[in-house]
Image (cartoon, rainbow, N blue to C red):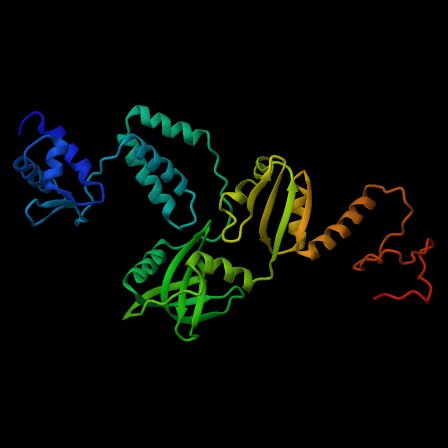
Length: 361
């Protein structure tokens, strides 16, 4: 083996780790050696444990395939930094048990990182403070089982726990897994109910493939993510907000923070600049109280297009805030749980009931 052989082998391995098939002639041209030398180097890689598969033909072709063990990987600088930062992020992920595995993998990677790259990774990590919301975690083995069933078009059985705690046994034909922040959803055709269903993976117990194949079915939406978004909004009491905000989009985005970065999951807020001083915000919320609070905290004027109930809610909230701030206008304290009187309705100054001629609609 010549002095140049180790460097050439590393160059050959770097090319083969790209997911494609390489004709022998192209490898020869890239490395500046003969086809015979390429064949010898391929054999050396196989002896080192790299499963290189060859295809027959006039020119021949080579590609790296999965083997019985994972051989060392060659990473360029940017790839190594990206993986290291990703592993640090995964240590606080939503998949149960991934934290320990991520730390182990990160320790191995940092051990072999050049000092210049180790410094870059530590600089990014030192300047970043993760905000890890509380919430349920997902069993990684369950994800692996479901992903395998999707790939193999195989029916799955599992026990599902509803939000109220009731459990039921399900037999489904899997379609897709949808990741939404810290939540994972499993989209499948429910065999017993003859309809599509969305299941939260953290509420599924003991999923197992049945060995029975199932046909491919078309979802009623363009893709699984769109289906999850629609079904979540139609199955829960949510309000869709559409609001014009009279502030630059950058100002609003800074106030919304992580809500715009994907943590809100399907249906999270979406922001679109209208001009230099205004933008349009759409999104969903479970309650009008939350919508009103969120909009009030953005620090700018805004106009509500929908829902109309939000305008009424803000009007009532504004009245309470004005009274709490000490409005000099004489007012009686409103009775608890009663709506404000209609404009123009008689309001007695002595706190007594209005005249009998007054009526409420």
